[in-house]
Amino acid sequence: MCDAIRHRGPDDSGYRVADGVAIGMRRLSVIDVAGGHQPIGNEDGSVHVVFNGEIYNFRDLQARLRAGGHALATRSDTETLVHLYEDLGARFIHELRGMFAFAIWDGRRRRLLIARDRLGIKPLYYWPTATGVAFASELRALLTLPDFPRTIDHDAVVEYIALGYVPEPRSIFTGVHKLPPGHLLEWSAEEGLRVERYWSPVRAEHTSIGEQEAIEETRRLLDEAVNMHLESDVPLGAFLSGGIDSSGVVAAMSRMTNQPVRTFSIGFREREFDESVYAAEVAAALGTRHTALVVRPDADMLFEEVARALDEPFADPSALPTFLVSHLARRDVTVALSGDGGDELFGGYTRYMESHRAMELPAGARSLLRSVALTLPHIAFGRNRLLAMGRTSRGRYAGTVALPVRESEGGILRRAVADRSRPFDHVLDRWFDDTTSRDFMTQLTMVDIMSYLPGDILTKVDRMSMAHSLEARVPLLDHVMAEFALSLPSRLKLRDGVGKWVLRQAIADRVPSSVLDRPKQGFDVPIRDWFRGPLAYRLDALLDERSAIYEWAEPRAVRRIVGEHRMGRRDHARTIWRLLMLDRWCRSLASGELTHPVAIGQDVNALMERAAADGALARSA
Image (cartoon, rainbow, N blue to C red):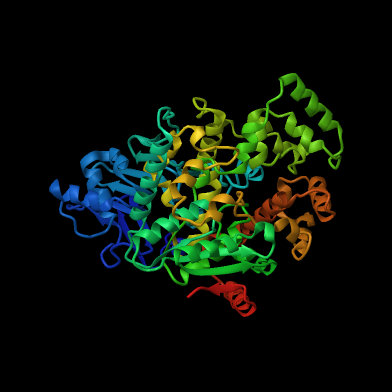
């Protein structure tokens, strides 16, 4: 199992095997490089832990433990976990500030405790069986078990086609679960398995806070979080897009370090997708040592490598540039900070404003518009607009983050498969239902924090960075900062149709004005045009009815979306990418590739050499 995830920890491995239990880990050495070998036990060896992540307040915790009489054998943050568990039991998790997935085996009570951090930065899968439970950071570790059932969950495929990822608590395999963010699991032979939520992003609104107080506290918490995330015994840098979030993080880093921060960015030749010029401007203003790569369609040669780095079907195309920027960074550093989470916490996505302004029509009008739309042919102008107008507010927001799966609404699934899904208006209900105490704008951000953030953004960053044995840290998702941001009223986030107002004010004197003034761009990939040009050949694979996708996809619908996209009648790039990634994942499963660690091949090095020769790869002094 550990060998299958060697890429997550190439520096060391460790195992403990005893009566009825085996725990192991792969280590990427970051803190206490020499002394942090795992598993780590308590003083008498009755409790052991394996741990993935970082505990950023570990020094304070170590001091407290020593004052309480504990003898610590290492300088590692990992060791704090076993001693805190001795003192507090499972409640100790509330003392942790960091990103983590860990497992503690209590030999005295013969009890297992596994837990995942509050926002879902680190992954954790578990598979309960009749005799116990197996768990791992990636599915590929579970796939090595000889009795592991490789039955694909059809409901998970439906959710994947709708959302582009498989949301918690499902995984792509029947009977295997993702432990949701902010949850812990306890297991013993006598009591069985129990999953419990220990943290929720839902917060009461801080109605009385003033603007200046909110700005100052945002700035203070940003600095505190970034400072804690700089803890490292190995080289450290940052991803820099030139947007508000990453620029704010790098600006804070620059104020706290004596040496220029190493920064890394990705750009595109297609101007509407290219942020590299803004990243270069911020890098120059902050005096960072900057490395930038311009991505071209020839990056498609990495499609197979990116797909192999994923243990589940996953369809965010920005995984490709994330793979490349991680490769760039790993050549110089072992740890990279990113600005992920700012859009969800502070209301930065343009879809929030669009959904906030959209008016929900009466039920009768919605029903009429939907009926009219469904009588029109798929290619009819305005059909999708009528379908959108016929949705509830929740359904209209779903239309900005999800795709319909029923063929009548433009989807591609066979009817028998699509009928397993919820009506499109209710795709996000499980998350909306947790947020009904706040205004609609805040509900949208909380829905994303519970679904899109862990399912898409954090999964992408984790898998693509760990494919290169690079640790990615997300200071904006420090839970203390997150709780504060989640308590802020919408008036401090959305102002004059622009999001992240309070965060903009907090960093206004630290970054170039262009960072604050330009419209939201987002980290996206020009696959729409690539699929009509240099990557058009990829579409042919979808028309081969021997593909595994046709277990779920309706051939007629696939032919329609491919034809419409090729002719430029509609943009079906998101659907096409989802099908391509599903097809590639199925082939990886069938071939046995998914039981092996990720190995970075020669294609990425060849692409880098070509980019350097063509001037598409640049480093500042």
